[in-house]
Length: 405
Ligand SMILES: Cc1ncc(COP(=O)(O)O)c(C=O)c1O
Image (cartoon, rainbow, N blue to C red; front, side):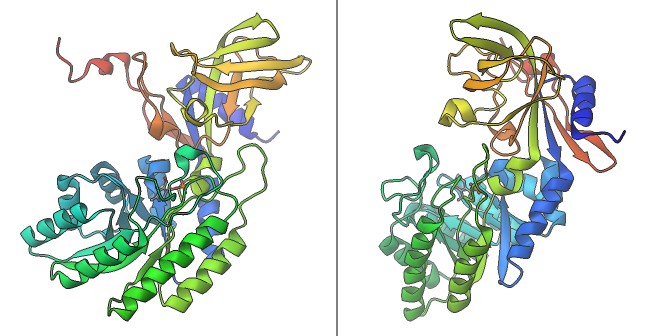
């Protein structure tokens, strides 16, 4: 009998212990190809948003798939470069870049530094001057649109901390145009994450196109029209994001502007290709439900605690003949908010069960913490022909590294 995915996950859990993140490298390749194909008729650059999953092995798959990177810190920039992404394919976004991070980005020659305030632009200009070079500048527009998503991941409203209003975006790019150490190249926006209805993205794009045209009239020719990321994934069986109409609409707009379409997807590329494997340690039957205490929780997957997000659960252990009921799947941390799923109708878990938490490839390991002094979980890359550990589980003693009493 051929080995099933469950067999492989079972073996990985036995070899590495739990909790552990497992990424399907072939599925990641396929998603990259799908997105590249959807964009094949459009002058484009896909900058993978490293914030979703910054594992070096995954970055290297992205690099092989011809992706650039969207980074927001010196650490992510370093990882993108180590993973094989060319500086000329990297955009540096982020609302709070430090001066040393800006200096590093200029030194390595990123494609564009997407600034979000006049104060930041001044620092970029000073650093470019100090390095006797020209820094390529993008400006992040706050498009003042509302996306239908969780408020913590909606980033395009007028009162958000991200970007600058249209009049300021215009001013910033004009200022960059007049500075010999700056070259204005991009206009960017990002309305939010986990979006299914592209209407606010299109609305934001029209606003950005207005700024783009005004700048053209003022003699400033930009190159990249950066629409950010945000493409939603069906965590709980929702319908898939409609790539074709998204690309069609934005592709038409950018070709009319004579621009390269830059996209910064993170979640869409990696969320579905990752699984968090956890084991049930104990169960308690209380009132109307079973509480199953797992060896993973908010420290490995923060999304349920942070946004009330839901992830699918699959038993890897054979549960034939078991009853179903209401279940809280919780973690071991000392917080009532520490859960993987609450009040879910599912097969009743038993101690020792191995459970696969799906769609854990994005915003999972990158948001992990060592709360309660528990070491981070390791990562495994599975591909046709085998699997390998791509990040070790730290030994408990390493929690004391760099500490002094
Ligand atoms: C500027 C920017 N680009 C890209 C992304 C990636 O978003 P997603 O993972 O939803 O595609 C984010 C996420 O917050 C972002 O802020």
